[in-house]
Amino acid sequence: MLRHDLRNKLASVRNASFYLRRRVEKDATNLAEDPRVPTFFRLTGTELDAAEAILAERIPRLPEVVIEDCDVDAAIAAAIAYAGAPVSVPPCGMIVRALPAELALAVACLIQNAIEAGATAIEVIATRDGGSAVIEVRDDGPGFAAELAPRAADAGVTTRDGHLGLGLAIVKRIAGRALGELRFANRFQLVVPCR
Amino acid sequence: MILLVDDAEAVRITYGALLEDDGHRVIEAASLAEARLRIADAALEIDLVLVDLHLPDGLGTDLTPQVRSRRPAAPIVLLSGADHAGGDVDLVISKGSDPAGLAAALEAAIAQRAGRR
Image (cartoon, rainbow over all chains, first blue to last red; front, side, top):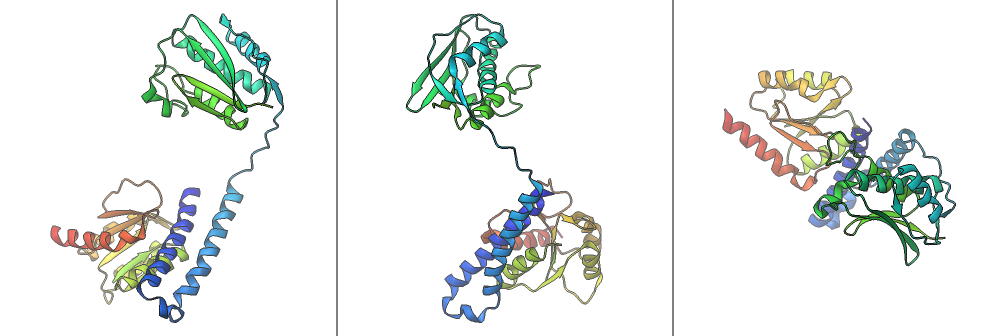
C-alpha cells in the first residue's frame, strides 16, 4: 500500500501541475477568476508534504555506515583465505575508506565468481585510478558477456542453475556503502575511494 | 457524466478538474458503497465509470457486475497505481501516466464500448 498511497499523492501533484500549466497556456489573464488556481497551488504543497510524511513514517531510517581506513592488501588476503583457492596477488600498498570485513567479503565474492566459472589461474589486481582503488579479479575463465553485465549485479540474476545470483549484488552493495561503485570494463571492477 | 470513484480527496479534486476542463460533467464517490448508490440512481446519466482499484470497502473491479447490468453502455476505466492485469474493465490508466493523454483515452474507451454493442 506504500506504492499506492505515494502514487496517489504524486498523481494529484502531477494533475494539479498539468491543470495549472494548461490554464496558463489557454488564458493567463483570467487566472485570478479560477478558484482552482490557488487551490491547486496549495494542494501541490500539501500533497508533497503528505508524501514526505508517508516516507518518513513507513521507511525505516538505516543505521549510519561507519567508514574507516582499510588496508587493501590485508582485505584481499582475507578474501583469498576465505575463498580457499590459490590466488596470486601483487601487493598494492593502498589504503581505502571502507569497512575491512566488507571489502574482504566483496573481493571474496569476485574470487568465488571466477572459481565457479571454471577459472584455475586467478589473480587479484588492485591499481590506483585517480582518487580510487580499482580492484579486479583476472583469471583464465570464460569471461563475462558484456551484454549480460548491466543486470548481472541485480539480486537474483544468475546464469547458473542452483545459484541464487547474489554474489555481484553483494559486491555492488558493499561498493555503494563505501561510496564507491561496481563497474564493468571487460570484467567487473570494485572501485573504492582511497584515503 | 463521468462517475469518478476514489477515496483520496486530492485525487478526486484534480482528476475532476481535468475532466470538467475537458467538458465532462463529473459526479464523485469516495467508496464502493457511494458508487453503488450513484450507479443505481436512474436520474444520473452515467456515460463512464472512472474508478480506483483500491478502495476502503473493496476493489474498484467489484463494481463491474453492477455497471455491466445497470449501465451497459458505460465503459469501466480502472485507475490503478499498482500493476494491475485488467480483468473485465475496458481500460486501465496508471495514476503515474501523463494527464495530457487522459481525455483521448477516455474518448477512445467510450467509442470502443459503443462499437461493441
